[in-house]
Length: 162
Image (cartoon, rainbow, N blue to C red):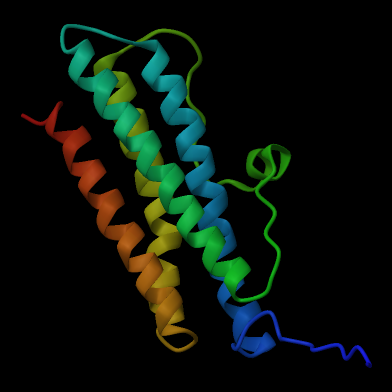
């Protein structure tokens, strides 16, 4: 009996489409990872009269950001490409603005997290437009992330809206 090797491509998507798609999804993964890390920092250090509501809401933002990062990363890997979201890569490549360390009033933490969501949405909106001509399945992934981030933004900003 002879053993034959069967080679199965890692993806049915062309390598050019995969590479073009990954150039938009990889930065989204990096920014969502940064958002999750900074969100947890805010969660631990928030202070103020509405502490518990903001504290719990920040945990939801973190959980969703982690889920969305995983969704986008798995799309890249499903296309047959590796992804680099190691902590040093996230720190050096994110567009997320920095956050002050230590305890902060809830109004500051909310404003800081909204600014970070807004920075993440810039790349997401660009990806939505560009992926329309490249890969509609990946565009759908990014649309799902955008809907969720916009909802998180709304929930946060409602705490400080007048």
